[in-house]
Image 1 (tube, helix red, strand yellow):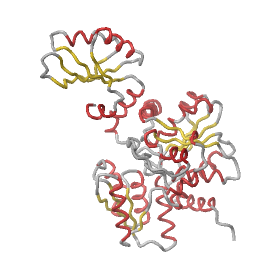
Image 2: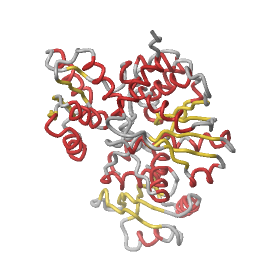
Image 3: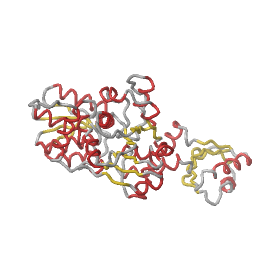
Image 4: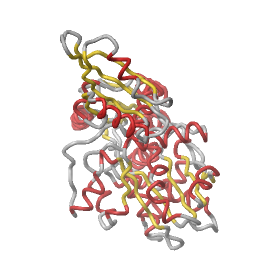
Length: 419
C-alpha cells in the first residue's frame, strides 16, 4: 500500500478538479518580460470558472467531507468575495444546499455573481457590517448541525486544494525550470500550499517570494516577530488579501521564510500595476490579483535573465472602483495633489493663484470650504500634472508669493474627510 503524502493528496484533488475545469493556463508575457529583462510567465488563476483560485480549496474541502460521509447534506461559509463564489459553484456541482453569510455592505455585483454561480443550490444571508459579524453568524449556524462550515484558508483540505496550482505548474513547465515563483498572500492558503508542494518536490525548487499589501502585512509582521500576530489595523483596499491575521496552519508552513522575502506592495503602486495590465495587456485584475506582478518592481534587480512565474490570483473587479484606482495611482506617482489654500477675499485673488501653475498643470477639483470669512477664505483644490517635479516649482512659487497652503494628499484624516 502506497504512503499517503501531501503530494498524493494534492494529486487526488487535482484529478477531481478536472471534472470542474481544465488546468488554468501558464502564459509567457511579452510585455513584462521585455520590461524586466527576464522570462516572465503568468499562472492565470483569474481564468477559473469563478475568476479566482478559491474554487480549488472550497471544492476539495467539500469533496473530502462528502467522500468520508461527514456531510449533513449542506454547507455554509462566510465571505464577501472570491471564497463565496467558489463555494457557490461547488455547491451547485455537488447538488447540495449551501448558505453564504455576507456583510450587509457587500456590493450588489458580488452578491449577484455568487447567486449566479450557485443557482438554486445556495441562499445568501446578509448580516452585520463587517466580515467578523457574518463569520460569527456562519459559525453559529454550523454549530446547530444544519451545515458544515467551509473555512476560507485555515484548514488542511483547503490548503491541499490550493496546492493544485503547484502541481499544474510542474506539469506545465515540463523541462523548463523556474528560477523564481512569486505568490500573493492573504490568509495563506494558496501561499502555504504551493510552498509546501515545492519544498517536498523531488525535482526543481524555485526560489519563492511572497507579495502582501503594505496595509495588511500580516505574514511579514508575524515573521518579523517570530509568532502569529493579529494586526490592529488593516487597509481594506486590497479586499482579496486584506487579512488581519494569517491562518495558523499556513503560518506553520511559512514561519521559516525570511521577512525580507515578503514584498510589501503599497496600495497606490498596486493601482498603477492594475491600470498598466488593463491598458497594455487587456487583463482585468482585482487588487489582490495584481500583487505578484507589482512585486516585480522590488524584485527587478535580482530577476534579470531569469525565468519567473507569477501567480495571478483573481479578476473579480467591480469597474465602479476604477475611478478610485486611477486616483490612488496618480497620488502614489506624485502626479496629483490636494491642497487647502487660504486666499484673500478680494477680486483677482484666484487669478493670482492660477498664475503659479505651469502649462502642464491642471485643476481637477475646486471647492470653497468656508465662504463666510470677511478677509480670507479656505479652498480645497486638486491639481494634476504630467511630471511630479512640477509640484516643486508650484510650491516654490506659492512660498515666494506668500500664499498660505497645506498639502493634505498624504494626510489620512484630512484626505478621508475632504477627498
